[in-house]
Length: 486
Ligand code: GAP
Image 1 (tube, rainbow, N blue to C red):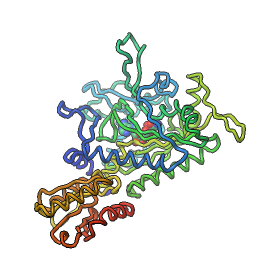
Image 2 (cartoon, rainbow, N blue to C red):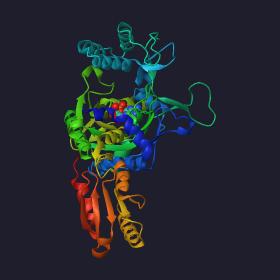
Image 3 (cartoon, helix red, strand yellow):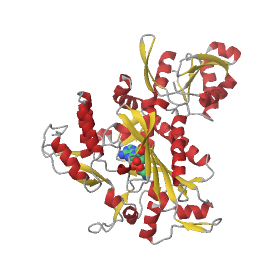
Image 4 (tube, helix red, strand yellow):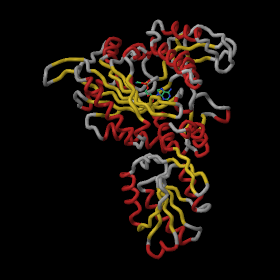
């Protein structure tokens, strides 16, 4: 990992704000922890990533259909899914500062510190202890013991005055109805994952879309988690968006389908232009699997903060459908007409965070290059994701150039998001759009008025070509199709 890559996150946060990709929520009131708003460029980028995923999952698979389920669900859903009981993080409080930390993350930070200090043996020993710490029951005790044994201090106060480690449920609870009665009578949760909206609709979808197993249901939507430690920009948020697909399969075919989806999803990440060497698959060790999973792997990206999960692929077996069958009393079985067999399907899930994907795209695209003695900041993202596909400029503010540039802009607007810009030097206009990740800039000059040509300039290598006005759309399409990350 280059130093550049390591130092990038702060720069990406600054650029995101300066150029209108991502803002802190409620900023004028001092912000709200781990909640973010997307600005004009961010909203376009988000829409493009969402569309790339939706197209890949639904349009390109005849046996995958989409739904859009509500955020609120019956409270029993979360009992059946195991979230009320088990969707917890181990947390510990610093008694001096009253700040709360995730116990496992404190230990991870200590491992990093040992690594930085060159104490590799000790770092490895501690990592092993963390990796083998607790099953669900013993986890809090094990983590507390490690923190005590290694005398890990609170990062903010420097104190060594800890509470016990306790489990903290990550679901946001709210009240349903206009009059809130006492206790938890009307309690509902903001969904912590979109997946459950798919499970509870599986029969509805199958009955109405005439799908047969194997088939999938895809969904994009908001999820909410009251993360104990919510830092690192849009990497870990309290309100975020997930793109999930549940693939319903015959038991016994689940392992093959799991492998297939893992490789298909890796292919998708490469297809949106993420550099191969920054992607990897990290299978979960058997003793660390989520309560619902038989197999699980993360697709990880090498963020400036290290290798981290962007997407999870899980073999959820028949866990969820069986639980919903039991809690709702409604049959979740599938009847296979050809074999006359009845079974509860297994589910292979692909679950990717939209915001985390956006952070990955920004991190992967961000470059600083020296050009003619100056630093050029450029986002070399896949043209199909770029918030603005093309800039259109008249070389100078003369009516004949402005008219032709406006005409080209109008024509391109039918198919692409374009920006007309006539202020400042051409060099400055290029730089502004480099920072926005705009892959193509079209400049109209006086020669073009004679021979109906323009200059197209390419963001990545800054090369320029002279092309006929009527070929502009075609060149943009061709270059977008053939684009490769550099
Ligand atoms: N239905 C399975 C599920 O929700 P997960 O691994 O907890 O699995 C899937 O979440 C993906 O959702 C993650 O890989 C990540 O991209 C995204 N995600 C999870 N928590 C997040 C958070 N607090 N902020 C942003 N993205 C998050």
